[in-house]
Length: 338
Image (cartoon, one colour):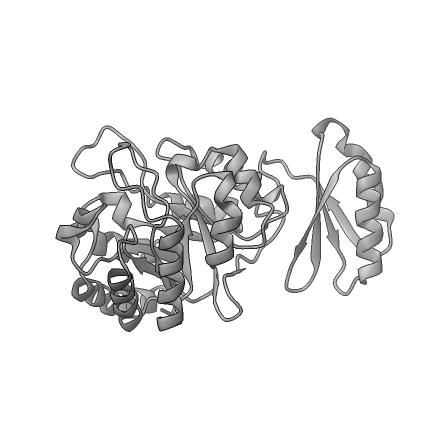
């Protein structure tokens, strides 16, 4: 159930409602809206009818049942999709946010050169992996904390906030102490211990769709994070596994309008992992913006031929610059900014 507070309801009214929800055996989650607050009451579905009595409390406009299994991620809870990343940057509004950089942090020179290149081309965020979950145990696993330090240095040099992946609950606090946004990769999208842990921190979370996930399963993973208190979740479609072998994955662009009808969470598209081939990245980025994506995550490397990971899908800086120039035309056509 969700409790919709009246516009202008006082903090005292909200606190009383929160207290009553706890007394009834449910967990309250306050979601701040632009005109009014909504309080989600999460708990045992069987006794939710008792929550209806809250409708008579001071400051309450209505108590509404949520039919979807994902409660806090549902569009019924919140209409606007804006998620703050830093004090000056947010995703889910009119501006399309582009996160770009190498798959892996390899050296100080490499990550700073990459950061300067993507900023010059117009990206608003840097991406780069310090911890790398790889299919093969013999593949490059990342520089770990040293990689985080190098990402922080690139942020200091360029001013770009950065997103990087966290791969287990034990390193969440460490990664959060450096990063502006934490990424949950496709392989960990149903690692429920990790999802719960990132739900307990106050940093935005970029949640990638698992390669065999349905849309509902994807939203339920977001629900795991949000049910722990962190409402700043961004969804990322990065391609799903199908019978097709011409591309690394099958990039499901239909997920954009589907998710937009079901959730208020912003949607980001990763055309690099979605296709696995740098030739296809720009066309899929253009299509994603036309389809309503709120952001893009694109791999850019100064020397893809020598990249430690995912070189074949990484753009060179000059190609990324061309992509960004053309992308502005698609953003304009979609009544968005870049």
